[in-house]
Image (tube, rainbow, N blue to C red):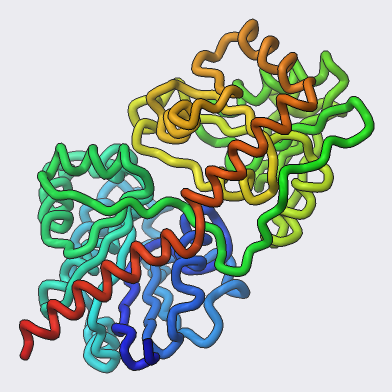
Length: 396
C-alpha cells in the first residue's frame, strides 16, 4: 500500500501510546509502524514521554484543576464531573479533529475517554474502533451514575464498527451482553522483537524463578509469598521485575528474604535477554479472590515469557483467562488451587530439566502462533481498512 492509502487514525483514549505499563506497550507495538503522518494521538495520561512514537503528534489532556479536586472535600463529586467532561469535545479537540480530518477513531475501554471517542465518531460520521483490554464494566464504578454509564457503554459498543477483545472469553462475554461480536486481538510482540529459543538449562542446581508485573492485586502478594517460602526451602531464588519494592511488602516475610531480588524497569530487549540467560522459569498469577473479574482478563506478560523461551508456573482459578488458555494447550504446569501441597508437587516437577524443556517448547510454539505481530496487527489493520472503504463508498 502507498502511504496515502492508509486511513488517517485519530487515537483518543486515556491509555498512553508509549512503552510503560502493559496496555500502553501493546498500543505502542500496534501503532509503531503505522505511517506517522496518518496518526494523531490524543491521550489522557503520560508515564514515559521518552518512549513515545517518534514523529507522531501527541496531545496530552491532563487537567490540573481535576487533579486538585481529588484531594479536596469535593472529591466525592468528581465522578459525575468526569462523566460530563468526557462526554463532550472541547473547542481545542474539535479544532484538532477538523484540522486532521481523521477517517477512523481508535480508543481503548479504560477510564472515560472512550466517551469522547464515541462522541467524535458520531459527530463527524467516522468509524469507531474500540480495543477491549479488560472487562470495563467490572473494573470501573461510578456509584449512582453506573446505570447511565453502563447504558452509554452499551451504545458505544453497539455503535463501534470495529471491536477487538484481548482473548475469546472477553469477546464471548460482550456478545452475550450486547449481541454484537468482536474480533480477537491478543497481546502482541513488537515487529522487531528478538524471540529466544527455550533457555538452555544452567549447570547449577539453584533454580531462579521470575515474576513480572504488579503486586497490588488482592491476593497476589500472599500467593507469591507462599511460593517464595517454598523456593527458600529448596535453596532457589525469586526475582521480581516490578515497580513494587521490598519496603512495600514488609508484612510478607518471604518476599523480603535474602533469596528474593528486585529489579527495576528494563527495556524490552534487555529484559528478554536477561530472562533467557539468567532465569529458569516464570510465574503468572491470576486472582482467586477476584475470580469473576479475571474470567475476562488476559495477561500480556505471557508475551514476554514466551518470547524469552521460559517455562511458566501458572496459578489461578481455572476460569481465569490466562489459566484457561494454558489448560486448553494441555500445558502441565498449572495450579488451579491456592494449596501448598499441589504447589510442592509442581515444584518437584520443575526440578526435572526435561520437564522444563518440554514446557518451554510448548509455550514457545504457542507464543509464535497467538502473539505474533503479523497476526494481531493484521486483525486491527484489516478492520480499519474495511471500515474506511465502506465509509468512503457511502460518502461518494
